Length: 247
Image (tube, rainbow, N blue to C red; front, side, top):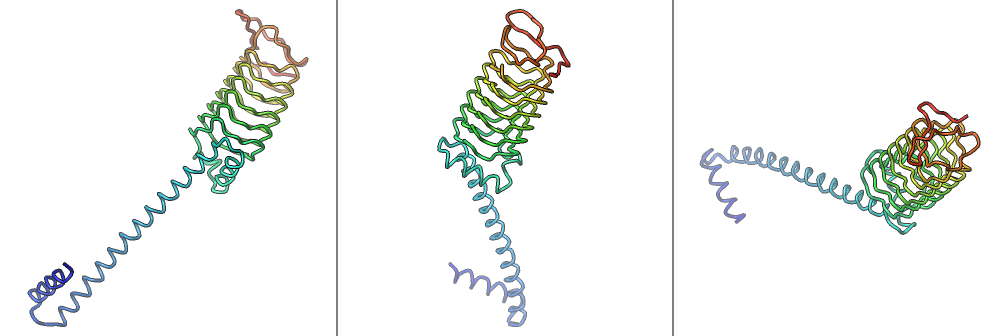
């Protein structure tokens, strides 16, 4: 096949230029260099596509491993994602980390909006300045975790354990905290506007400077002494008036 191609090419050159060997050689090299350049471009593009695919596969693997129930695997993957600059970039938005064991992991500045994180072990983890807007963390263990200045707007934290966690200066506006354990939780300066606290346990929570306007809680729930008394709105529920701030 190669011989036939060569013979055909030679005959074509001779037909175009006669038997003048100099013209034949010049034309051959000009076309050959063009072909080589085109081939090099194709190889370069293919290599780049293969490298991009390999990178995407590696990143997807790290996301899967961050959701592992094996603590060593999950924390190592989180660390590698952070080293790649992906932990806070928005790359993890919408991911599923349910049942992951991220105990004591360093997840500061994590951005994982609209994520599924049900039943995650985050006790002792550091999530300072993280953004978990609209994420679902139901039944997760967040005891003694650092969520200072975290954004949990419209998140769901049903039946979560936040005992002794630090949520100072955090934003929880519109979040669902039904049945959540908030004993000893630091919520000083937090935004709890329109939060549903039905069934929450928060008698020893620290709430100085917290915004409670529109937040609701079940009637008769024990509250810290400095928390204003919410208004009875019927059906066994009470609610703080708009603009309420703890002294």
